[in-house]
Length: 191
Picture 1 (tube, rainbow, N blue to C red):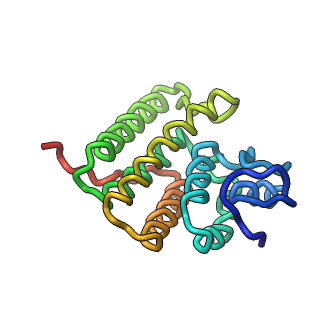
Picture 2: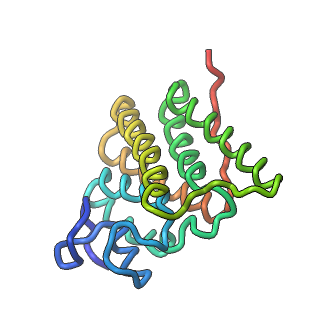
């Protein structure tokens, strides 16, 4: 297993992040955006890879096999699965957070709309392919992860605790993708 590093790399000789390692495992060209992993799941893996400590990053390689194919066979939109995992992690850090409460509600609404479209025989509107679709997945995930990092700082977490939150987030997301569902985040009523 290679030593994983933060950021993107030109080629395997100059280093490798989690998703670049996944691309190699999947037999794809060296890239941090392998086709084998849904863009929303890959965006979460990028954020976790780049935010954890060097020591914690080395353990991410153990999840690389799970990232091969993650989200590509999910029936319905994948981005809500990823955002729901971020919302759950955020609400565990700060149960009164307006951002994570709203995110959880939006995920719930998106899932209800997607279920309705599927029930009506219309496409779920996942948009899993193409450059524009990739940006539509990556932007919201990156934004939600940035809020999670701010919440972890506000909660006064040390590096080890922050690493644990982020690795648990990736594990939670992968479990939800594997199960093909979006567990409902616990939403604290707005007051």
